[in-house]
Length: 137
Image (cartoon, rainbow, N blue to C red; front, top):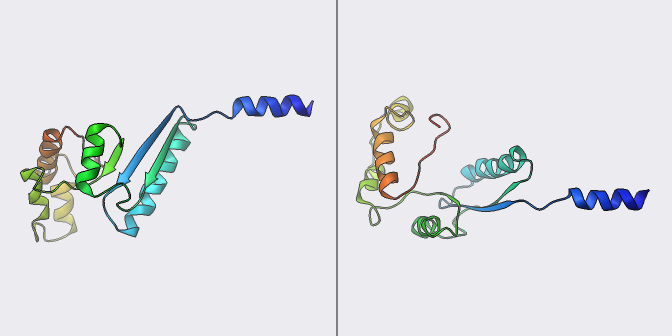
């Protein structure tokens, strides 16, 4: 009986159907914890069908390398900020003092009505990518 159970357990222990590389171009520890949780939740919600190999800090490269990896299909997901040398429209995010306070930031960046959200969407389309925010879906 125990041999049969062992054999059955081996059959039930399957490998993920998909393994995705997920890289982050920012070297900040505070964001890494959330991305690790995100990767774990994908595995949990897909019941192990999708495994996410998360590479914190710029392990897979900087922003330009991550962008190229996503474009080439060697990286499935990335958190990056493309620089003006790739897409001139993206440089507006690097302008200092574009917002006065957190509420202004939320209005400009975190809602689909926000001017910066719209600009980021336009740049993402130029890059053949998609932006995502938990607040906007």
